[in-house]
Amino acid sequence: MLRALLFSLLIFSVFAQAEKKADDGSQIQPDNYYPRVKLETSMGDIIIELDRRRAPITVNNFLRYVDKRSYEGTIFQRIIPGYIVQGGGYTVDYEEKSSYPEIFNESGNGLKNSMYSVAMARQNDPHTATRQFFFNLDENDNLDPGRTWGYAVFGAVVEGYEVVDAMGEVETEYKATIGFADAPVEPVIINKVVVLPAQF
Image (cartoon, rainbow, N blue to C red; front, side, top):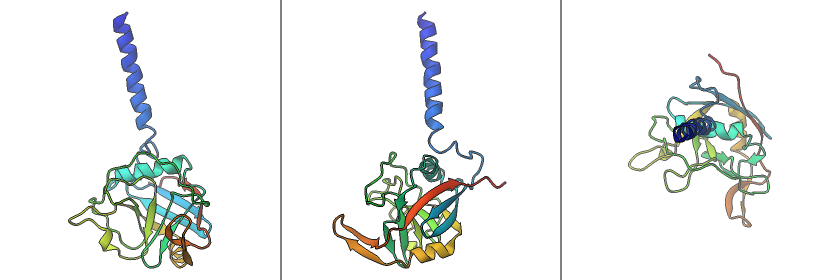
């Protein structure tokens, strides 16, 4: 009886672990090292190609939010011309969206914060990225790792460069009510995000 109970608990544990792993983004096109995602925004569509070979943790984390449709209805809340377009964490009303746990910083993966690359935003501590990401609008080598941790690049724009450029030129302002600098006067909204069919 005890042996049967222990066996049942073991089987339950194995299935629980498998189910947990299957929900971390790794189950989305698992054999595709370079999945593509389309962002349908209020300013046009952008297609980004992710690099799961160089940044597996970061890509799987991003795909998890996409799979849960958690980026839909969020905004690009920080836009600095000639530098970055950052978003994915706030609603149009500037309410912060819930996040999965912080992830390991993969900034040492060899990918650079070059123009049109996509990287994870974070706090000052290196391993604090959750859901916010940004497009680089220039060769931002100051964001690459050196003696300190950098910002983890996990993909790049492959279509919709003109949309990213246009985002970088919108009028911005300081929103005193929430303490946000460089916030667009007119919201730049992510309406829908989908994983595109795999290309092999």
